[in-house]
Length: 52
Image (cartoon, rainbow, N blue to C red):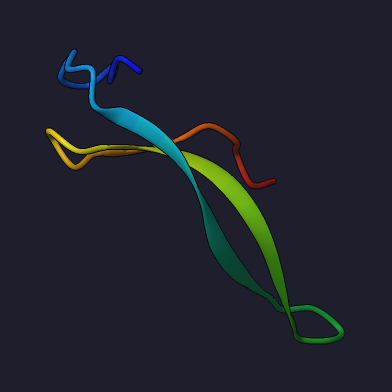
């Protein structure tokens, strides 16, 4: 997979877990698996999905 940051063919997709604290009437933590693209050459983390 070509990395859009450094143009090397060393990017791969892996799952990461992101936790969000939401403040409102209640406080809770949301954990979800997000697929991200990481590059082995430039070590850039490129998010494929945005957290809304």
